[in-house]
Length: 330
Image (cartoon, rainbow, N blue to C red; front, side, top):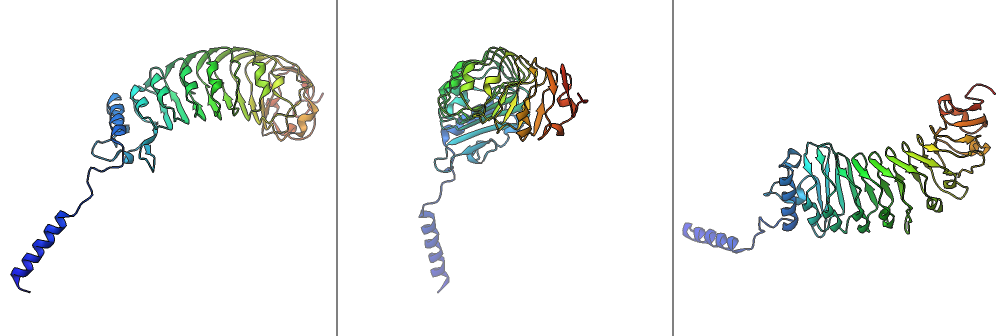
């Protein structure tokens, strides 16, 4: 094959190669609408270093803090966590229609109220807006997000009362409203689906626990460090399945003597209340991992057996006349 023939052949092959369809460099996975919204969110926060990977020339499915659905490539998760980010949650968050997980967490310079645009995100299953400086009320619009299984608004500066509408979240497994500045009474939540674990500690809630709570079985109830009062013995019973309860540092006042505790109970904290009577003998049958009944008005001998003597005297002291190991003998 001479030089001319070789040259013509190479030229033909080159033309053939150029005529073949080639993958477009712009055919990225990320949906163009979602990408535009994410860039708006970044801009609203002042283009922080935490979102440095959000560059328009890169596929947004490869950016940090976001996740694309493997089939549709729509943004399904926005998780902005532990960084130097200032400002308010932008309304543009509500323009990610397929979002399932929304997390803004451990962002001390995140301020403002929770935007109503979040109510548009009907696919949300997890919302975690915690350890920030968010203010304002707990929004009632969360009741519209029927797919929610986890709602965490803890460690903020939220004020006002707890919306009773939250009881309409029939798929909720856990709700965290702890460590805010919430006031008023606990609403009569009527759960028609799953019964969530409820965390309301470190607020300024007052009044009794609604009797409706006695109709349900919980795994965890933490109402500690409020100003709640009255009788909570109806939350217990042999047919209950609760495992962890913390009602410490309130103003509860009732007779503990005849309360029947469920076999499932592993952690009981009643310290700093006005609870009177004696410790039931059946407490010796429970597999306690934690127990504290200190700073109450209990009397009588601590029952012997089970795990009761394995706890330090601090779990029992500062009662009216409680005695027996690990306290001094009666």
